Amino acid sequence: MMQALLSTTHESLEDRSVDTLVSGLRAGDREALRSCYAAHHQSVRAFARRLIGDADVAEDLVHETFLSLLSAIRNYRGDNTLRSFILGIAVQHTRHHLRSAVRRRAMMVRAEDAPPPSNPTPETSASRKQLAEVLTRALDKLSDDQRIAFVLCEVEERTSREVAVIVGAKEEAVRARVFHAKKKLRELLNEQGEGR
Amino acid sequence: MSKPNLDTLTRALRAEVQGDDPVREVETFDRIVADLNRKKVSFLSMRRVPLVLLAAAFVFATALAGATGRLRSVFAAVERLMGAGTKAAPQEPLRPAPASSVLPPVDTPPQVAEAPSSLLLPTAIGSVAAAPSVRLSHSKSVLPTASAPTDVPTEASSVAVPAAPIDAVALDESLYREAHRLHFVDHNWSGALTAWDAYLAKVKGGKFALEARYNRALCLVRLGRTADAKRALAPFARGEYGAYRQSEAQGLLDRLEQAPPKGGVVP
Image (tube, rainbow over all chains, first blue to last red; front, side, top):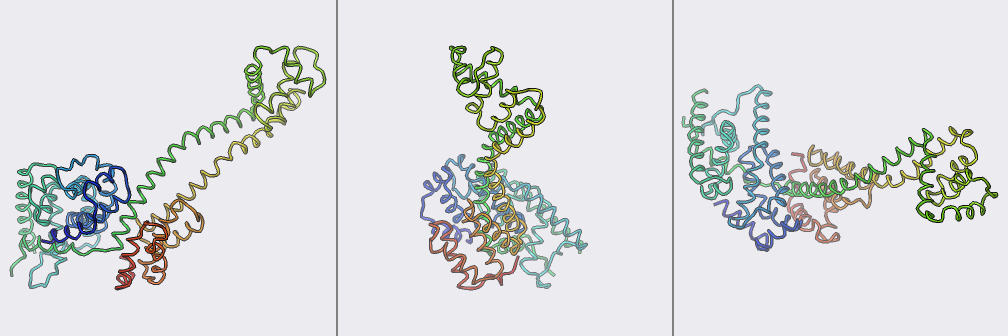
């Protein structure tokens, strides 16, 4: 729903056709890059924040994604949407950002000498932010592939076909990753609940 | 006591990341453009590296040769080459002519070999080498050490002149880099503002001046200095710099008109 809304907004921002935009990007045109950024940065940023759970690191990922777009665009064949292609670039650059975000979170927990946010209940009037943090910390325990697949499929509600294009894997593999991710997340959340 | 299940947490994460930060969006794009420019600049700088190295090697070799007294032999070799190159075929008949025009008549053949050295040198290498070569023609043993110091600074200064613009470019880049770091890495808005001001004061027509001006405006927005920020953004929004940052500046101005940015608080 939200994605549909965002995409409508983004598309209305820019009159250029995708072909013009892509050829501009291939030529290294800054205006084309600006248009592309205007149209797609929110999708990339939202994905990066959901995936990484750290606004600063996510911003670095957005920066890196668009920075490498001008060279990566040569590989764009036009058989998928430009947004999927750009998200694919983000996925390719995501691994070391994820590592640094996970390390940072772990370090902060140690430094504060406090347990990670507890599994809150509605009774404790847990905020949405806290709930999101709980899931982010649980996601830290997954493999990168599972995490990416879970965020794209479950959090961003993309089809497994689209996710397969973004991550460059088969649909079946994506579904399997999501399945295992959900299974592991449930186990982790149950453990946290019991541990309290 | 129901715990939130995975679906609830997933929905929370989905909804949590909806807010946007217009200043940050602009800053990130600015960072992208700056990095692209820097890549371009560093590529150009890389192309200059061989020239700089060549010039440095030449200066060093000349200075070394001057200090060790071999410069004269180099000059002599050059003279011989020049002499051989320009007047190769009719060597003997032509030499007395220039020599006689400046020096007293030269009689003996051994001195004929040295006489052109003092005469050809100024035209071959330039006025820098005139003094030592004249001394050479008079006496090799009297002034070997005296000529050395005069060679070194003269040569060095004459060759090092092209290095000055490169230093200016380096200064330009280092100031820009520092401001950029404070702004986009440290998020130290006040420090970045000072650094952008310093950059703009130092390199008024620097290649990134326009970008620096825009970044300065962003700092003002971040610091909550709305009136200053509006003043700084206005020329961009009016299109005084063409389409450069026009839409972003207008967007920021609109937002500043609607509501001040989150109290200008540094996030």
